[in-house]
Image 1 (tube, rainbow, N blue to C red):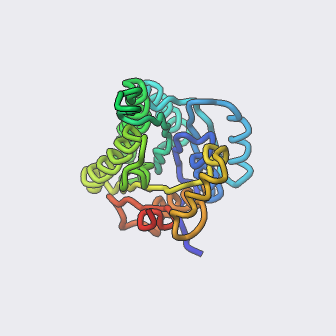
Image 2 (image 1 turned 60 degrees about the horizontal axis):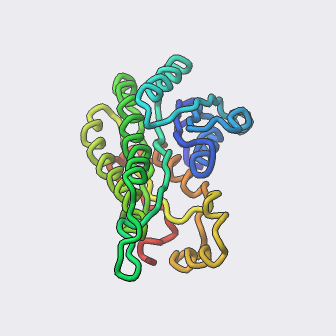
Image 3 (image 1 turned 90 degrees about the horizontal axis):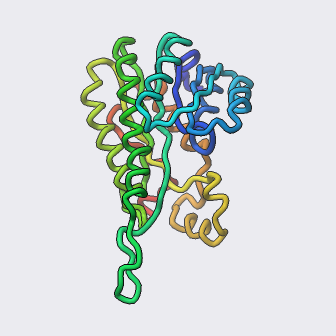
Length: 260
């Protein structure tokens, strides 16, 4: 068994109430980490904290909108006050607001992506990552090291119909990851990104089987991903086993990039 070196580490996971974020919080809890689970909604927060504790970790939940600078800074201060510092930040929180940039029917423009759709996705997926990392980084620097992990997507490597806003943010996350790896390496801080493919979250579960079959058809390994596939990637990148990896983007997609 690979020794992760994560037992007792303090880990912040944003967007932790469901999907990949919840799976990631669970995986770190299994390693005996102290997990600060953040989400914009506090629905089922008590249940989540109890579950993470039962898995072997210590947990606290905070309702945090990552677009709100004051809320992020207050939540970081709460984590530091409780556990003395931060070791790992997982910038997982993200949203979609899909629309074609310009939709044309019978030669006429019938719809466009709105400013609200653009701003909402940029606010969470890009500025949210900026806000959280800026708030946590000083604590990592003072501690002499740490790990920042950012959620990108294979969509930004290939483009995706109807997702101008989402693809732009996920490409931006890769750019920030590489920049921060350069800036923070001198302090012993590693910064990496994970680019998931099609993962069976609640959103995908609600899709017609025909659509899911199409996703599988584009995935060489022949299945939709599980949230633990992504959670395991985050865990490995945070662990001592990845101690010489920074500035990288790890595609976890069943081969989707080469299968598309």
